[in-house]
Image (cartoon, rainbow, N blue to C red; front, side, top):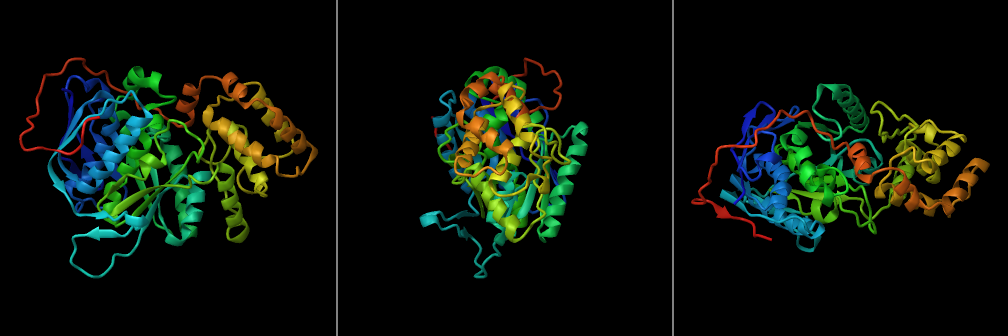
Length: 454
């Protein structure tokens, strides 16, 4: 039987380090490096092991489900375990190739759980004090359309803005300048609104052997492992020690897709909404809004509170928007359809941009996936209800109305390659791993079985 043993974590200042011991059946899916997560400026000393193990458990669980491996951990949070069962059930339904597996722990710690009855999100704790805790929230934030919309929707909660390095921006030194651009932008956005920030850096892409995961499972997923399977549970799980240390009751993760889009994707309501741990509940936010409707939310915020708001969505650079990639053009035309001038919010755009945009779509210059097809359909639907502002805009919208978006996507290149680029599912360089490891066994004595087989 395949097994993955999560060792007790260690803390060095604000860095959490967790090693794992996979059995030989699944060792090829691990790089041999420990999972290292740094929570800048956050003390981890008071965070219990039942919470410290969650970042590693969140990365490992989908791998275990794909291989039928059992997971062993010393101590784990009871609320997280209950939610993980729901995540597992929904992920197995989404991906029939997943086999399932069990979770075993020597200790299950119940420090309190989120009360979900009738939508009540109050926290039930074992603390005898009658003084209620101060509500606090966190928001995974990049400064793009989705996370900015989520900020606008929850700005009354003054959420802590959480930026993560490790997925679209890797821990490699070559990405240092990209990380600094994101940090600077997030810090500036927060300072203008008197918000707190939190910066997390993790090696989750090199902790797992993503090339090996793709070699085995890419025929089942349309994209990278982390984008297609792991990033909802994985990114939220990384936030657990931070949320415990800062008493964050809610963590919001902005939706990429919306109702009516049934794509296999690692972050969905039936995954994110079930991620929780003692004192904290996670939320897949904005799923009821299309991307154009999210731009409408931002446009109203611009008009009423923040006329100089700049967005950052570019696939090419992090220190601004190039104005020439598909995502820049798509965001710019979306801003126009929401009544904003793109050039005033971070996008080089003029009337000549419409011809360039059509050329990029028609000639296959951009690599597109099903995500983009839905997003261009969303733009087309709004354009049909909107009076064009210029002959160039009118001509582009007339062409878009009759364009076969399915054919454009099919002619643009491989959706798998596209998602690897767009979602940033890149891995740091791996050392050559050995194919044979000494056999080891984990005695089940003293462990409680916490999850059911498929």
